[in-house]
Length: 422
Image (cartoon, rainbow, N blue to C red; front, side, top):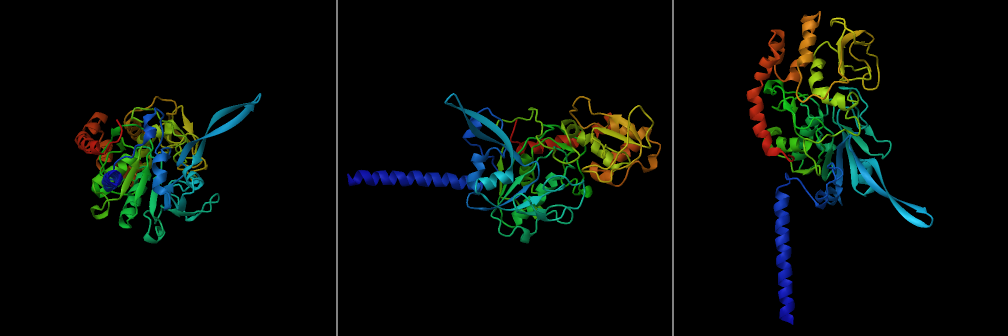
């Protein structure tokens, strides 16, 4: 009998050792998406809603969270109603902010790190955001914008693990991916693991536009990618790590929590505005194409209710459509404030499936002030001098697109290595 129990004990040790070995192998490769039993259902979930997979990684740890108003998840609760003495159970779905959810689950959240537009997402583009305290939770908020785009070692003191949850829109110059770069770099330098809660790219798998050239690197374009990269923010994090784009080629201890039951062809409507001037699906779809106007003297509707769905300027040819920008939330001093602008209303056009140049080219052709149409910011947005030169010399759209082809082929091949979804 003693021999029998000895054998059982040895078998148990072998199983445990084998299990530990598998855990060690998994720990060495955090750059692989974590999937759990929830993936077996057909229900779509964001990375934040895949909480059964990431909560165990946070228990007993001091946690920092990089997020803003987009960091929400749908939480299911059960409501009991008694009718005629019979209990009925109703499923109720409510949106809850990630920070509130983590605190409710007794996770030790220490600090919130907020990108451009702030934690609540109400600041103007480019507006200086100061450090502060969240009124609801009392947690300190560290601004990751202005002169402090990268968390300093003292701002990371006491953090065991960092969670990143921001909704990207798939465009190179949308600065949340630049914040991702700096957070990854700071975590790598300070030996802090980073967990990215993935969210869909509302522009799906569209890959288009000129590739950024190294000499035009800025906060609105940090990597050699096209304007539309066709990746989720989790996939993009894998690319930053894999291509060793962080300082001196260091790599972050990275874990991606994927969207469940998601593919790039799925229509995804954002539950909240990702920033003050992207109010709806139409603006998000047109953002990459119309953002080029931010490097010109043409308004994209800031100071109206149709931001990134209209464009116009006092210098464009008079047309049937006009608007007058006025200060509002997210645009305290909009371009052409109080001036009548003529242009075009794109708020009801069909969804675009590429980077459109026709509106930019049309505006340039019709402006009465070509000498000051472009400003220095345009080159940063384009990531190259060539696009402005092509438009100024009258190149056709097909000629301009042809000049992107080689770079896009190279990028798409590189991109394949980091894709999580079909």
